[in-house]
Amino acid sequence: MAKDRHLNRKWNSGMLTTEDWWSVWLGLLMVMLGLFSCMGIDLVGWIAEPKTWIDPAKGVVVSAEAYEGLHPIIAIIITYAVFTALTTIGAAAMKWDVKKYFWGFTILFVITWVTWYLGHNAYLAAMSTKYEKFGISWSLSMGSGASYLLALGVGLIIGNFFKRFAGFLQEAAKPEWFIKVAIIYLGVKLGVKCMEAAGFAVELALTGAAATIAAYLIFWPLSYTVSRKIFKLPREWAAVLSSGVSICGVSASVATGGAIRSRTIVPVMISIMVVVFTIFFIVALPPIYTATLYDEPIVAGSATGMTVKTDGADAATGAILDEMMVAKATERGQSWEKGWILSASIMTKIWIDMFIGVWAFILAILWTTLVERKPGQLKVPKSEIWFRFPKFVIGYLIAWFIYVGIATLAPHLTDMAKIGAESVEGPMRHLFFMLTFVAIGVITDFSKLKGLGRPVLSYAVCQFIIIPPIALIIAYIFHAGMMVPGAH
Amino acid sequence: MRVDSEWCLSVSGNQWIARENEVSVSGITLDELEANIRNALMQSGRYEKEKTITVFLGVDTKTLPAWIRPYQSHYFNRYMIFTI
Image 1: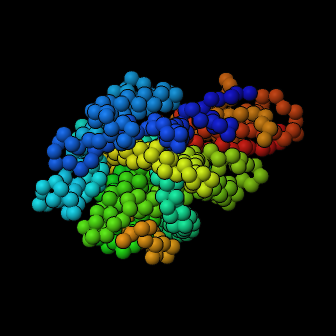
Image 2: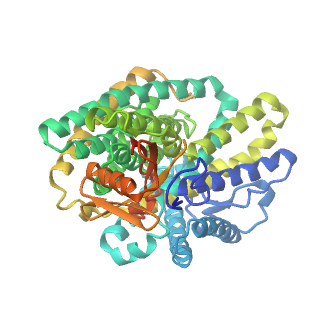
Image 3: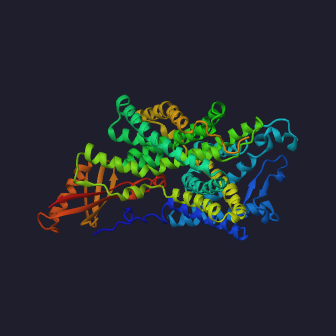
């Protein structure tokens, strides 16, 4: 009997060959190294990070006190060496072109660092409360948001105007991989925050789940009906498009394509739309929500999670939104802790991700029994749910619960644990966010939408007209009145 | 689940293609493909008459373009059950 190695048959298929699993390995490796701080050993504090600057020589700092003697340039080189080595090992295991990956990642790293650093110039990033410190009279006051937008802009310019160069970088431009690693690091942040506001984190998780289920049950049928009745798309196109636009973008399109046994070309074309359309939200949604939902920051975060497709784009939008809302609060003399609005958007998205497998399984059963009408002849294995489960969520939950466990079972270690956690959930997470922004830009080629006709129109109507207002209403129902903990 | 026969599916143009070792069948629709798999197995002489067999159908993950695989490395697996 044939045993084709390209079939997913075993529960552990892909553990060493998929980005999803490699994000777990890379994420948890740093989480574990960070935990050594509980024993007084800082193994992660060597990472460099930009800080707001007016004097260029003072724009980069080393993360932890234990490494304060390290020159920032050396810290950047160490950061580059560590993450190039780790991700290249992953690339080799996934059988990518290692040489191309190495050079591609090196260039991405340089672009990332240059944009990260420039975006922290005081005229772009400084809040009005810091004008005196930097000796300036004005600033765009964008916080880290300036770096994110700069990185995205540079990536988009490469992706749309230097296509040969973009083609070369694509071996290393992996936004989903980078963002999944970053989300695992965010699990550390959530764990640390739970030490301070456990009740709020639990409430955020539960309301996020409820909102997600509501969204599934409303978005999908509406999008399917619009695609079928108004745009007259065939069933396979309508089903895949509905999952892409209402659930979780590319993953859901592919999962649904598989569930209903569509030709592979269908999810591929829908996925192109998903990737390209998300850019509009990354740029437009944060300023709109900041202007209109300032009093409901968690509603804004959750609505972002339901509206923006793909994990990378959602996290990117959530990060900019977080920066802009926190900056606005600062301008108004309030103090909001960074990360909660981003956590709201990511938690909503993670719930959506987790249900993809279940949703695809249900669709597969419905398609087999009601549409194809082959009950009893074709069986859908339950293992499909596991195959489609986003594995990075496991890493995120482990990271989160480790720190909750420390706070609960060994509270005397909390302060020590925070030392390692700060480098992982701070500079390391920001680095992977920045890599994601550059990579999203590089892989987004707007010209790919040409000639896709009715499916594009249907997708655009669902994505711009149907999803955002409903997402906002659902987010409001479940999150209204939730304020960033400690806001004062 | 015990499997009697395992087929790897791929797409070429408008054709679905299934292969098991050296045997390859194709069909424009999945219905046609499955009918052809069933015929191939019936004619293979490997199974007794009136025996119910379980056939595993899995899509070759390489069918998906490389850039999309990271988002979802899995397409679909199915079991086809029929009597020879």
